[in-house]
Length: 97
Figure 1 (cartoon, rainbow, N blue to C red):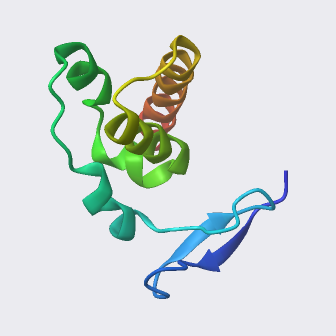
Figure 2 (tube, rainbow, N blue to C red; figure 1 turned 180 degrees about the vertical axis):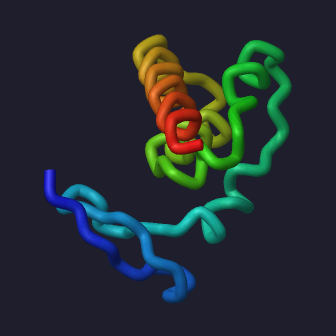
C-alpha cells in the first residue's frame, strides 16, 4: 500500500503518514487528550498499558483506545487485533535498538 506524509489536519504542524483510506490524518499530539480517559475495567487497563511509543507509531492503536473510551466495550476481534499490532510494534522497537 502506498503511504505518504501529510500535515496534521488539526494543528497543521506535524507530518503524519497517510494513505487513501485516511481522509483526516491527525498527529499523536493532537489525539493525546482524547486518549486520556478513566479506565475502570482492570482487564482493559492491562490491555491498554503499552509503551507510549506504540501509540505514537500506530493510529490504529489510538483508534481502538478512543473507541473503547467512547463506547465502553470492544469486540473480541478488536482485542485480538490490538494485541497483535502491539506485539509487532514492540518487536519492531526492540529490533531498532
